[in-house]
Image (cartoon, rainbow, N blue to C red; front, side):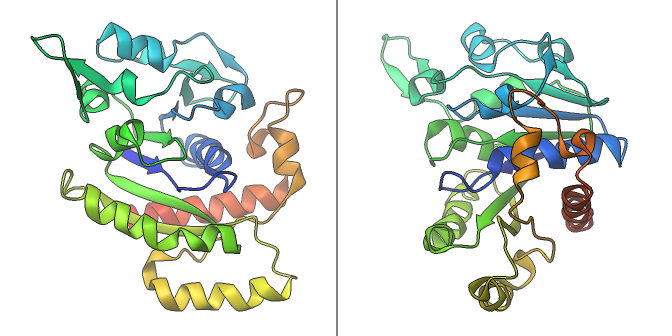
Length: 255
């Protein structure tokens, strides 16, 4: 089973949207069994989908037991399952262990132990915004790191830091591979986008995906409280094609 950590050290870049729709594409188009995990404190992923049953990740961590498939709630997309989250429950404190003398110590392998017996094709994590203990727990056992990159000054400012994160985390998890960066909220009719994309491709080489995700209000609508659907259920043809192209490119890189 392949584990993908979707992480970028900025808010609003499309981590949750990407987690949901890459997972939906793998489940619907590729017929894979996919587990997605909401680890972000905002819990937007849990709120964005219709989920039946399942448990919350903080509860399982506190119980200190291994995850089973029954811990994941069912979505309206076949083969797509969610480990839910509540707002403001993910913190460094949750990922600390108690020593024999009663003191607390950071533990970067809690999630690795929790997920060790789960059986499927893919686990995809919607990581928190910051490179702190919860995110480090994911990267400490993930196979791949994937970065949605908002093609804007805000997004580009932290590009180098993401490469540094991978380099540092690879010292803990040598198996962690950088899948690369893909553009999000892209508006190619704007002059700055037309100029920036070729520069990114030149700077990052194979680490910059050919597939990009356009700025699209229908994607936002599909996750609204009323609809709560993936783009594959909502039926936005353009968004479906873009996420299918992205997922195909991910699979090629993994193979």
